[in-house]
Image (cartoon, rainbow, N blue to C red):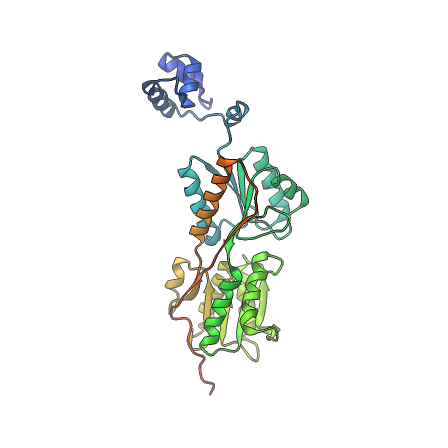
Length: 339
């Protein structure tokens, strides 16, 4: 076989002195082929580096075993953790994950969706951008798909996510219970379903008459904007005594700025973060944060989708919402008594 040439079933057949049809049946686990012959073929296929032609298999009526996964930011551990859990679950069931990143850009999202549909994926798990293009919506409707973490009304009614409103309500209430009244909020843009829900959870505690100067809506992946907004809050004439964040990246930006400015946490500022990254426990006095069961939600989402594919591709409305929980560490305390 020449360098760079794809290994075929004919190559395996010649090496084992078998008919090409026998090799094809063996690789397809056809019961007409003996177990011994199947094992011989599988060993030789692995030895030669044989990879099956998925397109050809599908032309013969064999279903696709590829699931598309569309996420905004693979560098965000919030999403990479979910992707890892989804891939593990799919792999155990004989499926593969095609991972695509949108960077929350709807044109990029459309390009990725087109590629998935062209690749004839069996289904799609999607974290939608704030405003998907109509063509993206039409294409996704051609395949079984489920929304993950975020929700957009134009897409399927199948959704797995986190009760974002409850998460931020609990975070803010923790600070209120400690005696804080000037509680600032740094969260994602309100045109995202998650951003709206998290901000609503904050308002549930501070009330509709809150100080708008205590609020900053930031692109959820922009660490630098989070740092700038925190600097604005800290340098204001009446700075907050406490702060809640509403995304992992924003939390990272806040911690960077607090470290750079050497803010004494929690004496000068109490902080409740979002998500529970490994480094959060080691930061300063240890970050009090809202821990989120991302791995569990991702596993439930992938399991549900695979069950639907195995049954009949049913698209009956289904939603699953899971809440987070407060992990109290050293970054929150009662407000300091003013001198």
